[in-house]
Amino acid sequence: MRIIISFFIIVFPWQFSAGQSKKESSTQPAVVINKDSIKNTLKKVADWQIKNFTYSTNQSHDFGIDSWTNATLYFGMLQWAKIAPDSIAYYDWLTKLGAENQWKIAENFINYPKYGLYHADELCIAQTYLGLYKKFRKEEMLKSVQKRIDWIINYPPNGNMSHTNKQTWTWSDALFMAPPVFAELYTLTGNLRYIEFMDEQFKKTYNHLYDPKEKLFYRDDSYFNKQEKNGAKVFWGRGNGWVAAGLVDLLKILPKGSQYRLFYQNLFKELVPRLASLQDKNGFWHASLLDPTSYPAPETSATSLITYALAYGINEGLLDKEKFKPVVRKAWRALASAVDENGKLGWVQPIGADPKKVTKEMTSVYGVGAFLLAGTELYQF
Image (cartoon, rainbow, N blue to C red; front, side):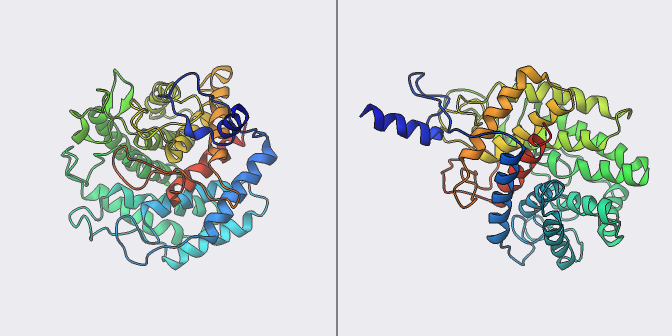
């Protein structure tokens, strides 16, 4: 009986959460971490997702060729293409999708008719367009992005920070979706309006949603007075992962000497170590950061986004390598254990705005995009 139990613990480490007894094992599968193994895992996951990729042709908020869900996958795939041995195939896949969409940005008039041109989620795909533009320098990849951002700046959004208003960045996810687009346009054009607008809007969201005591972000202001079952505040794993990953993307874009950089760098150095402290003993983060017992299953989209931030922090010297490298290695072993033999990534929380239950069979394109971001940054070690 002891042999059978030991085998179960080793093969299925995600069954044991941070809230369980210390007597239970936290042993992870034997995952070798080197450049070859990381690359092999990334290729396996990327190829499975491309093979199984579908999208709805409508322009609804969460589905469609240019939805935020797919856009997160494209951005992760773009980073993977930079190191993939057969990179041309991935660049071709991305450019084909862009051309099929005529390099447009969604106008979200179905779910949010008042906010269609402002909605931050619809801007996420622009990160891939701009990344492809930097490589191929085709004007059509830039034109629609610049047109949309110019319109937003010329017709300033409603500044009400209530979660019911989606014209401005009133939810934490928005800090991944939109700010890097403005920052990238600034570096490409030198137009200060882009960076000034981004900086103003980001700081409004920061001042509204950041809890300086907990050093975490609320998803939006509807959670200010809510509590988890254990009495803790509600801080969503993926919601904070979005912010951490968004900070990485901003810091990659903003020049080292930029007057705008210091705020984001300091926030990164405060938020990301706090997130690291909430990793469970198996290497995962959970849907609820402060009540993992109520959400004992691992959550790979949050884990991937946070791992991406941690790996970047080490690579850039923003985080102490000796302290945080074990955290990242543990996280990658956990993430690799969530990939099945075919390359399907499991344990991805479905679309939502707060902690929800998740199972091993659940996957989604945004989780895969986040996984590719984490792995490609870890590869830089």
